[in-house]
Amino acid sequence: MDLTYDEAADAVYVYFERRAVDHTDELSDRVNVDFASDGAAVGVEFLDVSLGIDLDRVPHRAEVARLLGSHQFRVFA
Image (cartoon, rainbow, N blue to C red; front, side):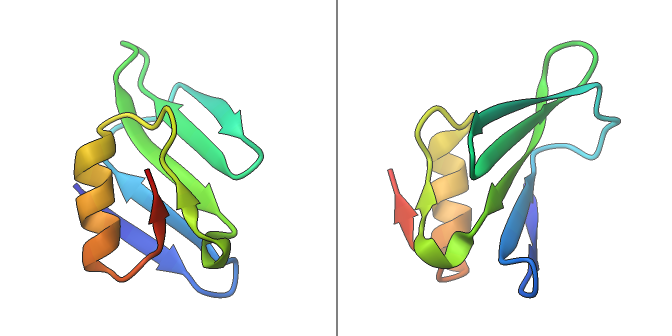
């Protein structure tokens, strides 16, 4: 699991796996989860991260929280 941060877009993308994305589910206006064709979550996009990151309903929540915390992002679990 790793992440990219785009400061200009105020966005973070957390990669669970580097696989092709089949579809995206919008969990909220600031959180989108990408899925592979077999239904496995492959990544999650967080927007407006300077406002804090809400992990409600995010796959691999505990691992994502640790990763984001290690990069000093403010997380709401």
